[in-house]
Length: 106
Image (cartoon, rainbow, N blue to C red; front, side, top):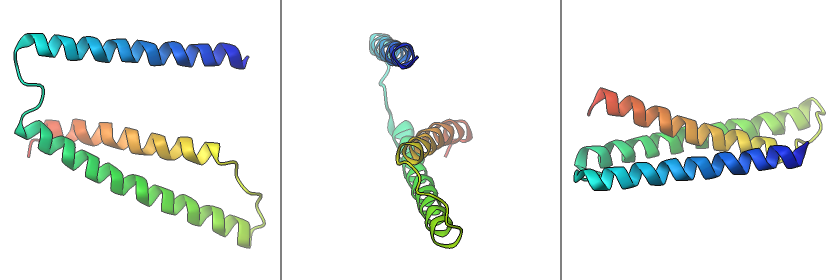
């Protein structure tokens, strides 16, 4: 089962890379600048806020694991799931904040 899932993940990564390169190529051919002052400011704000959100999520996750282990005798958690969860929080919060700040304006 895992070889099929791994091949699917690799295919999705390759598809996303092709779409990203196609979009960049299309924007360069259009003649408009890819980033101006406004989009740079929006990207910076979104990155800063997502860093804070992700850091607070990781701190809350660590406290939950420590409290669960020390007070409730829960077993230690494998590192893979918290890493995937924190990566998702970072990336999804950045995408949502970038979209929100782009629509909202300054």
